[in-house]
Length: 410
Image (cartoon, rainbow, N blue to C red; front, side, top):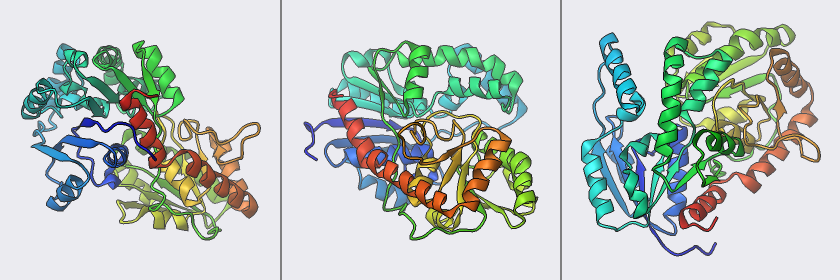
């Protein structure tokens, strides 16, 4: 494409965004950065944790004009006293612990000097946790954009409403503070970016912000090629970072409440849970017959291509889901909840059927059984889903939309 006028863009990502296989935040940040770097000068400011290797730094450096790295602050030990201190600090400051834990004074000083120098035309925060580095008066000098990814308040509220909060007593106290925090922090930005129209409406209601744009996630089609043939069989796959509370809940909900009913119908049915850093409740699921928990794997596509059906049984979580897009791109028919399919037009009048929707236990059993027993349906849904991804959800498409937001042409 013919790009817009070349800009100097300052991107802030406290989470080191490489490799993109580390998680959803890394996937979105790196792929948008990779696209923008083709047409603009990108300075990326980030933090380095102990698990980041020199080769990963070298590779990321090749994708930007300038890479500025600071050591990630050391967190307090997870003792009862430490948790109490973090809680009291949150109540006093109004800033959540997951945000303050990413704050580096050294990084802040560098950013203050860079903004004072007037070198950049746009500053982006790649995830809402980076808002802590933005001064309220910066938007008078330079366009400031918050690429929110997902709302912490809305996620907290939703988990309380659906009864899946890990700590309901704590979250009931947190919720009003999180609401006020997001309302105030959003005022520091010229523009907010979300991933779905549903998120846009929710953030509008929460913040009353005047300028909110939707930029969806995408898929790298070279990493998630369409499979050559339908795999058949009764093999389910569930993917995602297995240390994230909503994914932990999804896995436990499916194995404990849905999978036994499928086993009564299909004696050979299997479920493979694929995702990095599986938490203890997820690891425990491997003790159930037919369930395998892999942890992080070198190649997600190999596992997807072996599956008959991909399930996305999320009961909470906002925004468009990378795992849903990746399965659809790979040619694996998806059965997902309203949350798992958020932002995607996969069914309805005059819409090619691209996934099956389920929210209740019996709906999952019925949808999965339909796909197990009808190879033509599996193939049709898989083909429609791939077309949907190719036409709407690749990273070049998302990157071009993000570029328009940053240049003010959207």
